[in-house]
Amino acid sequence: MVINLPYSPPSYSSSIIRLTNSKSPISEPSFKLKTHFPKPYSSSICFSFASPNISPSCHRRFFCEKNRFTHGNRLDFRSWAIPGFDYGNFEGPQSVIEAAAVLTAIIVVHESGHFLAAYLQGIHVSKFAVGFGPILAKFNSNNVEYSLRAFPLGGFVGFPDNDPDSGIPADDENLLKNRPILDRVIVVSAGVVANIVFALVIIFVQVLSVGLPEQEVFPGVIVPEVRPFSAASRDGLIPGDVILEINGSEFPKPGPSAVSEVVDVIKKNPKRYVLLKVKRGQENFEIGVTPDENYDGTGKIGVQLSPNAKVVKVRPKNLLEAINFTGKEFWGLTSNVLDGLRQTFLNFSQSASKVSGPVAIIAVGAEVARSNIDGLYQFAAAINLNLAVINLLPLPALDGGTLALILIEAARGGRKLPLEVEQRIMSSGIMLVILLGLFLIVRDTLNLDFIKELL
Image (tube, rainbow, N blue to C red):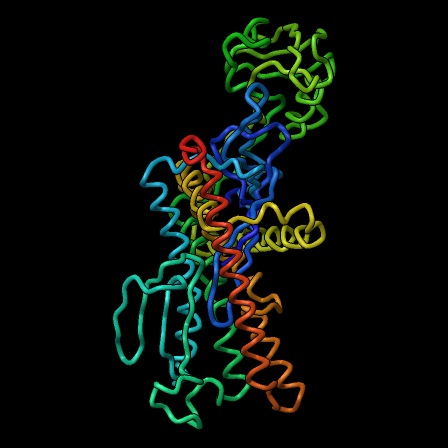
């Protein structure tokens, strides 16, 4: 499973989402969840984050935006970005366990799709594995080996088609390779279908249990926090103030754009007087602030900023409305995932560095779990959809690569490519995915804050 994580989780993608209580840099962090899952009947996990609305940590200390709300009236958890992989520490064992459980469940669901599609058609299956590499634990049931493996890069379902030790004759009609093209297409595509259905179920459960978060946006920009001894503190701003105007200009529209406008003006005016119209309680008055000069020559006043918005939970009144909410949310999230992937491929040179492995994904998932339960729902749904979309790409080691070989066979009138050629294509793809996954695990682990401190 490989994901391009820009989450959008959790406003509303492995590819994973805009949801966090962390302080994100004023540059409108975004979280687009994109997923790439390599495998020939297997899935692997690598995520890349790229989104302007969620950043698990903010390292620009004196000018941060707490941007939790995006795109209209609905919280946008669809796109996440982790700038510079500053995803911090694994804080809180419960949230880490929840995030890891979500990823494991998604892998199991994907592989169960392949497994059930084969089993229900009477096709022989020999293995069901979560992870790759050496076996950590296993058991056998009905001639199938179920195992948990060392490298958490995905999973796979094994078929005894070319296993001389299976005791199954090579011409057995219930071997996958001997089945008609349609039967094989159903097996290969079932993992994608399972993830899509799982995403729908997750969203439906969210709609029924906690409702969908919506935000009502008001004029101005909130100041949630003022740093001690900063320019803002010195000149009289306090937490809870709402900035209504800056230098006599009202904001054209509320929301993230208003936050960006305040940031731009402050950055452009180091050591120069900036006039703010502020609402405090029921009073409106003006405060003059003189930004300090940052090390890069820009201005800073030492506050966090957030759109002036109130979040409410919308619950369906009946089953039909719940289905309607689920459908809208599903299509919105799907379009966001597709758009995120499109942007990734169009700007691959810039987005390649954002590809992350399971360590980074669990770190982000843990951050989301600590934020609120809505985010975890959206995190899971977005990763499912990312996995589904990425797996349809016609690349070796992906379901789409296997489907491409089957379509080539169909175009050749039922004549398969030589077995050696198919095996080389798939084995090279799997090896590339494993090497990439191990590289990402090491790199992302070294980027964790507590590991940096140890080093």
